[in-house]
Amino acid sequence: MRILALILARGGSKRVPGKNIRLLSGKPLIAWSIDIVEGIPEICDVLVSTDDAAIARMARDAGALVPWMRPAELATDTASSLGACLHALDWYEDEKGKVDGLLLLQPTSPLRSRKSVLEGIRLFRVNNLRGVIGVSPAESHPLWCFQIENSRLRPFVDKGGLHLRSQDLPPAYVINGAFYLVAPEGLRNLRSFFSDDTVPLVMVEPGENVDIDSEWDWKMAEMAISIRGCGQNEAT
Image (cartoon, rainbow, N blue to C red):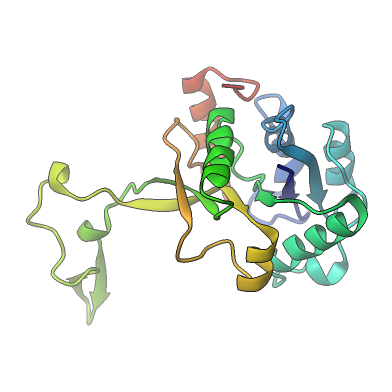
């Protein structure tokens, strides 16, 4: 099986300036996502799509393939990730041959474990190449969430679940952004990583659900690294 790992790393981050090349526990943020798939037999290449020369240089130094700079129309604030994914996938299959899967690794999720990546690939294989998406237990259960209507609290879910004890709530999960694996034809046809038969990859290691979009998120990642004791991304 051939899986192309793809990392989308646009320059110009506003909330955390230069975050993709900023050092997290001594290593550039983008390198965490490159390193975690190193040596996995199913991964045929790690391709980084970026519009930033400094990101491209660091990605190459970390061992990734950076064959071009992302076209300007795919690197604006309003450009979709889907467009950048399809652009990279089309180029790779034209130049390097067909792949069985596209694995999107967002650089803002640096603490996905190698164990989870391997399990996601296994799920992809045993489920006949059905899409696999990483999820984590929801921190706030939807049955205990509210919306505000006319300055009054109303249960977000009709009838809610306020009468239930926490241990009686059904498990609830959120997409954590750390792992997306899909067959190329599925992505092209549905134009989405999600479908009605998507397989969940439940990720429970400390910090795997961290998605760095703010300085607070960055501090949470540093704290998770400290707790896990993995200054250089764990390989288990």
